[in-house]
Amino acid sequence: PEDSSLAYFDSYMENELQREEAIEEELSKFLQGEGDGRLYLMFQPMVTLKGDRITGFEALARFESKALGLVMPMEFIRIAERKQLICQLGEVIFREACEFLRILESSGNHGIKVAVNISGVQLMRECFSEGVRDIIGKCGADPSMIELEITESILVSDFEVINERLGQLRNQGIRIHLDDFGTGYSSLHRLRELQVDTLKIDRSFISSIKGTDDNDSITGDVIRMAHRVGLVAVAEGVETDLQKDYLIANGCDYYQGYLASPPLEKAKAIELLARINPK
Ligand code: C2E
Ligand code: CA
Ligand code: CA
Ligand code: CA
Image (cartoon, rainbow, N blue to C red):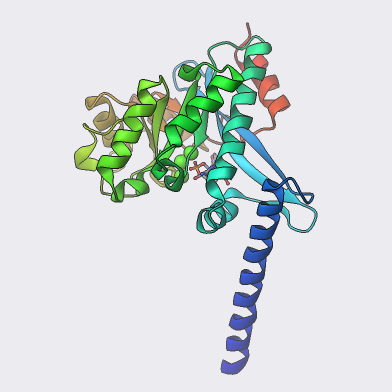
């Protein structure tokens, strides 16, 4: 049995490696305009806790090909980062997000924002903010309708460099969200100097809320701390009314999660908007 479990482990690792290689190959083919791979975005609404109005959407990337089926970003973003494909991929994603902004405008949904997830690798590139400015200029988007999400974990290294980059982006009118807040510890004491507008409280905090007046949950403290340093508070991964009631009671500004809506395709997102925010 010892031997066979080892053999099982070996073949598991081999399959993992093969899948990674296959994903890398399909991604690079896609970026060269070859193969049948398709990259697209799903859009999950961000909703006010007071009044349930949609103020924006977060773009979430998907990759699909005949050979691989649907590949989720948790899997392919990491591979793209490691294989130096993330910057090119990030540009495709950013262009697609700007395209959705244009669809929102042309369907009469003015003032709805689109948030794009950015990898730390992208942000560290010298020319990142110029690249962003170029794409925004070319598609004629309004920079104040664009938000970029960076995860707290990238602040561990090069705080000064990253903060300067974020400052450049904010000077263009782009808002910055600090994503997955609470999963890293590095930035807590530097939150005041950090060039961000919004704290997105990680789902792990939200899912641990036990009741509307759960005094043990520190989610309320995180919301109050965000407000104290002048940041907007967003809760992610809200799945139940109980969690939502807690967030309302603790003054959180916005929420996202299956309770409001899962990520949707473009057309469905526009449909939802017409239903939730009637003109
Ligand atoms: P994230 O930015 O924290 O995005 C939230 C993830 O939680 C999404 O998973 C979303 O579908 C999922 N989610 C939303 N509401 C709920 C809920 O109520 N319950 C639960 N259990 N899950 C919920 P997804 O789309 O698989 O994305 C995973 C991660 O991949 C994202 O986490 C983000 O870090 C990364 N990612 C996605 N798209 C991109 C992209 O275009 N570029 C980069 N660099 N990263 C991306
Ligand atoms: Ca995000
Ligand atoms: Ca997040
Ligand atoms: Ca998260």
